[in-house]
Length: 483
Image (cartoon, rainbow, N blue to C red; front, side, top):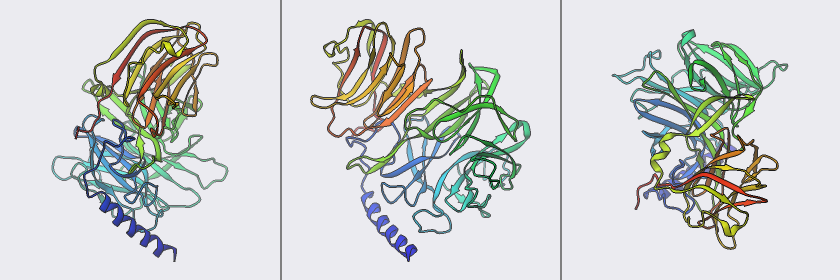
């Protein structure tokens, strides 16, 4: 009886939301992010896959075509040339086995690659085949491919490539080509059959993308895996592998194509709502490569909005050596500068406590970038109140200098000053905020409701003096054309 009811419910939802989307999408809504990716309508979850091909960034994402909750998830698809302006494409992959169940055989995250060697034999013309590996909920690890650079997708005829086993719960495949071993590698979040081995990531290899051999398992990281190699301090002759999980935790180590050897404990860069990170590997002209990551910073619905969920701003990843060791650093991609309007600057200014000293009181608006370096002097705490108004609290970003603690939207992270200074790069969108502290060593993110709050800003300090070395404030231009 349950299955017919699910089918009937889905049919009703399809009809309602199909009619609702017949009109042109409205991106001017009061809580619609103006430079973070959202779907025109309905719910989005984690990135399902990312791949760079022929000058295009492909973003695939968990997507419900029937409303603002995570049911009957398909694989949405969007493309961009600059990581900022996205063209939403038709759904790439629909649930498997012709299911009309709300969950079983629906789409969960995975990864994508370019089949440069045409090992699948599906290439048509000069464009190499794009391949997606994804989790079909309770239905195994599956594969789909496109021979026209992502315009149309075909499911592999012998799916699943790794069958579903309830006691293993294998999910979230990360697949890439490993050149030293001349093989493909798959990293799976997995609970092994052996009860003595803990939940973690398993490594498989293949030469044809369809037949996979188990190699090893690492305990510790949980959720969606990502694995990539980064130079240390930008030196290509010194590189390390980084293994990340679904909540932004990571471990640095060595990888030989079959097993990962951790050289550090599990550490964190992200302390906010960021999760489900997926990376683009983009080759550079000088033989180097950029590793760019995107994730979800919310899956929640906002009052009276036709969408739910939004992605983080894409960030560039790097490894830096500090006195305490290697750390993964995240900074907004340089392309974001395209959206910065004429800046408002404050430099070499000493600020005494008191709101009447607010140096950014002239600002009004809903989308800004605040990029500043602050000398702590004798201050007890300092920060911003964004989207403030009379009688309303706004959203507070606070650095407690007595505890070395950065906080926003109920999330906190330890942040030590460097030479007595704190750097904050703050991205304020209509319903989200992302904070990159000390050049991306610590990141906080979160979604807020802009219902009933304003368009004013406060920069405050308490308990002592704060010296502004330099602060650039940029109004951010919307990625959507003006109506």
